[in-house]
Image 1 (cartoon, rainbow, N blue to C red):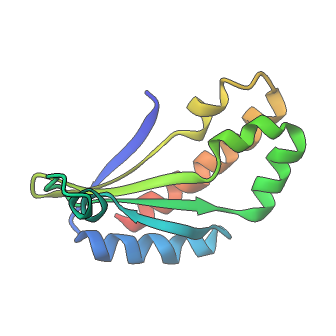
Image 2: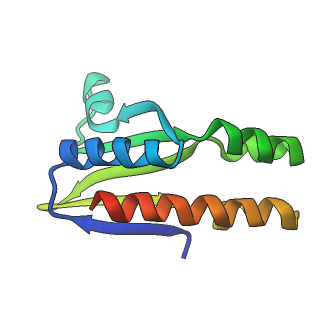
Length: 127
C-alpha cells in the first residue's frame, strides 16, 4: 500500500493544530497549507469536501537526501493530508518508502524509512 491513513475524532482544525505541534517535536515544519476545497471553489468549481494538504519538511533530512541524489527533490516536501470523509476526519500521507522505491539507492531508502516512521508517529500522536 502506498499510503498511511488514520481516522480521528478531532475536527480538521484541531487535527492540524495537533499535527503542527507534533511535527515540531520531530524538527519538521509546515511550509505550506493548501486548502483544496477553497481553491477549487475560488475558481468556480464545485467541490464540497474539506481537504487540506500540509507540505512538511525537515531541512536537515532534505539536505541529507538531496546530497545523495538530486532526483529525490521530486518527492519533496512530504505531504500530509487532513480531510473529511463523510463525518470522519482522516489524516494520511503517501509513504516515503513507496515513493523512494523509484530511486535505486539503498542509503536513500533507509533515510526514507526513518522519515516515514517518524511521520507515522506524528500522525498517530495527532489522532
